Length: 367
Image (cartoon, rainbow, N blue to C red):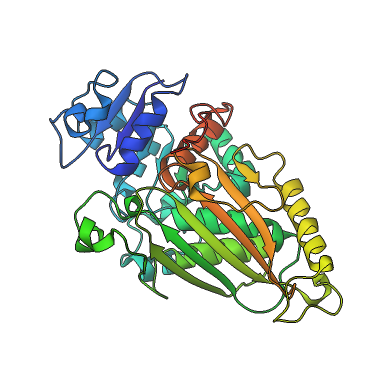
């Protein structure tokens, strides 16, 4: 099949190229860029020499010749391309936020500063977190061309960490706190002072505290998973690494799920609390047992970005605080793979009825 990538010169676009080169059903790649049209992709990314030799074309040219189109573009610019793909009868997998809020234009407009240009496109779109919406993706794809709103990187890690606990009713009253750190590739390829090497090297810094655009996406996911409104506190951090997102999620437990009598705040966790943590870990493992890219780690292990580097895996470790009243779940993903290009490829596999693991089977890099 012929696959188009619009925005092929950005980090997510380049990662899509790398992954598609290992996909057995991917034939010709048509690479598009508005800002670099006429240049060769291997001149921009020398790692692709002898693997890809392609002149970058216009987005319209890529749509006209492709069987499926990925769009790795900034939010707010992709709707015309999505419409053109639908008109041609081909799937459009969007890595921006333009199709993540198909049910709430007001939220999108408030956080991204513009209304939908074509609200009717949302009749054909679905939020593309496979672990949450796989059946809906399959259902829409069976009816005709579909638009996938690929999830954001922070929402992916936070949502997968929270899903079993919320779906099984473990969460009590109070806010769910998500404390997450991302590698600098999450900021994209364009230059900015915050991502200049001397600014971010050897430093860990919070940013956009209480105002990050992923807040409504995470909040919506958690509320859907819990079946009720969930209050969220989310703080992102910039970490001095290229890849990865580590999310630590704090979920207050419902009173009936905590061990009887609890535990003193100044004592280590009791035997009962440690046993309860193991029981919740088993609940998580059973919940995700059929998911090809979610790995619930054994007791005593802690999720780390090192364990998922350059892979589509989400590693999850499950813990309790010393009182047994708060569930602490740690998730690790590669922000460029499960947080972007890999998840987009996973969605393509679902749309076309392929094994979801195609093109994503490589083991994580150890270093």
